[in-house]
Length: 533
Image (cartoon, rainbow, N blue to C red):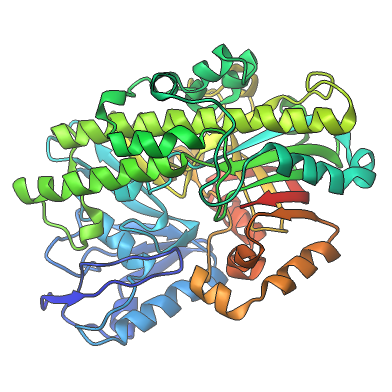
């Protein structure tokens, strides 16, 4: 079926896929759809043979979406099928799922979650597990993303909405004054090369040691705030230079700090275990990652892995899937540098938690401890980690790529905090700007279906370029004001990129995850104040 036609570069909804992919021996849209079968209300399977290119699918693919969400997938695929074999353009995320299913060492499925959209190499919202016992198994930076360990942290308070109604604007301003935001923002945490090395090795343990975090904070953080495999010697000088001035900064894009109130409680037992007593309780959500440091780690690895692919004759359908054998020097070097970026991200969110606590303390004239500003949980959604999972009844050690997907372990899993052993791991889902966010909990069924993974957010439905062309920033700011949301922005003219119309409905996304059995809803939150870059 493969004709050898090259596909040019371009950008999909998630910011671009595809320089160097292939268009196969042309199939019509109807023929492409024959490979996709809906097997349930929220589950679709993609048959072997759907991928275009010299690499063949080693496992089938599947994705979880309702019929309504599936319309976007079919629209992308229709555009793709309508092109000539040499036409330029993005690669649909269903094709990206299929290309990932071709990677050496993958087991069971290439999995797409309800918030899935096109990304770099892997779709955003893609999960892929590689067998560590397979000497040909690979690790791919495209399966983690450029913002390594981008994640969400949720902090509770003992305040309620009535306590902040009269101070929303001053509170938003205090957060904006304390937390550096925007492209190229500089952190207030003093950092030199020695300090940076400590951060990369220790993650949140450094934050606790230096007084930027409470000792109990790391107990409610994925990996307890430190990936032990980190090795700063695997990090380039360029990455260090980019990371040094940015510790404790929010950045730009879809990153944000929000003051939120509990809008609805679905699971009262889980909510109480998290310290949430009733609707209207005030929380703080921070969404950020490893900033320019993580981006440089990914960029450096992609250059090295391009050479590793050629040396080891790893056949790919898209050069953005550049990868290396897990056991190779390039593979091990990336995983150790990636762990450094994850530790940087944990320390970054810890530093911003410190700053948020100071902002609340200034406004309410109480200490953060008196305000009960404890971390509920901190979890990333762009990372690769070694985990043990049952595959066909056998316990196997797997390298889990989660890109735009969140770990969601069930009750009694040994890797979640003692406080949450009986409710399951909290899963933090940020909505689009001005819409709700969620706290979910992991399920046993999710371990079987998606290697303990669920969605990470709403998921883009329009590219940033399209959002800028069709939505004005004045309209977005007016809509937020009408909802009573206090807003502070470093770049107001970029706010339309994150407008709710640019995203899927987060309510639909989390409901689809629950219907599939991947996670359960525990709490819904709505924003009352937001700061962004």
